[in-house]
Length: 468
Image (cartoon, rainbow, N blue to C red):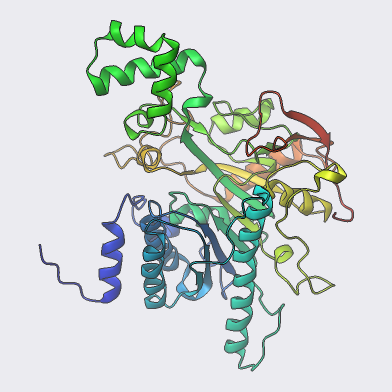
C-alpha cells in the first residue's frame, strides 16, 4: 500500500510507529499535559537532559523514538537535550539510532548520539564498573554538548566545562515508557511547586518465572502445556510434577512470550529500591515491609524512598555535571563500590544515592503512577489500550495475580494537591537522620548475581560527609 507523507519527519515517525509496540497516547499528549496540572515549563531554557544507555535494544527503540518526539512536543524542542550511548549491539539498534538522529534533527532537538561506542565490557571487567562507565559516558557527552550549545547560543567562541545550566537529568533504561510519565517525574524537582526531590522514579514490572513460589511455577507449567501443547489437564499436571520434565520446560520456555504473557507482573528493581527506612522492596504487592509505605503503594500514591531507579528516573542534574561545584568537577559520578574498604558491592545506581546522601542531598520519591516495562509482552499489559479502561487496563483492580496489583482509580491525575499531601506524609514519617541503616544486597564474589534470600544484611547508612 502506497503512503503519501507530507514530510520526511512524518515518514520517519510512521516507520517508528510501524516498527514495534508503541505505548499509546494518554488522550493526546498536549491535552494530557495541559489538563493534568503538569508544569510543562519545567524544562524552560533547555534545562532538561534525557540520557540513555543502549545495547541490543531494537525492541524498545521504536517506542523510544516516538516518545521522545512526543516529549519534544509537550516540553518544547529547544528545552531538552538527548544523549544516547550505545556499544556492542548486534541487532538493529544502530539502524534505529540513525532514524532517531533524523527525527531529532527534524524536530530541532539538540542531541548527541554515540553508536559503536568504544566502551565494551572486557572479559575480566567487573560488571558494575562497566555499567558505571557507560552511564558516566552518557552524562559526560551530554554535559559537553550542553556546554557547546550554550556557548554557541551566547556567541562565545569557547564554552568551557561548567557553562551548562541543566537542572534535571532523566535516565531512561531500555524500557517501554510514556512521554507524559517523564513530565510527571519532572514535577518532583526543586522548581516552583516541586517537591524538592533529587531522585524521582516510577516502578518497573516484569514477568519473572524464577521468583514465583515453586508451586506457582508448576501451576504455570501445567497451564502453559494445556494452552500451547493442547495437553489434557491431568497429563499437564503430572508432567509439571516430574522434576526432569519441569527442569527441561523451565530451560526451554522461561523466556518464551507464550509463557510470559500468562505470568503475573512482578516489581523488578528490588536490587536498588529501598524504602525510607533503608529496607529493600519485594517482588509482589504490597512491595514494602514498612507499613505506611506499603499502604500508599497499594493506593497508587507516591512515597518517600531512600533510593530508587526502576528503569526511569529524573535526577537533579547539578551534582552530576562538571564545573558546577567549587572544585570544577562533578560532585558525584557513577562508580563501582570499594569492596576492599568494606563498601557494599551494590549497583552503580545505589551508590549514586549513597553519594548524594553524603552531600546532604538525595531526597528520593517513587511514584507508582509511573509504570515501565522491559519486554513487549509486559508493556502490552501495562499500557493496554482497552476501551473505557483508562490508562492501562491491567494496572489494578483485578485479582491478586492480575498485572501489578497496584490500585489506581481511573482518572487519578497529577495536581498540586498530590504534592501537598505527600509533603504532609513526609513530615509525619521522615526525619533528617533517617535511615540509620540500609539493607545491602551485594553481588556475590565471582558472580554476576545477588542472593536476595541469604545475601542481604543491614549496614550503616551514609550521611553528610566526604564521599569515598
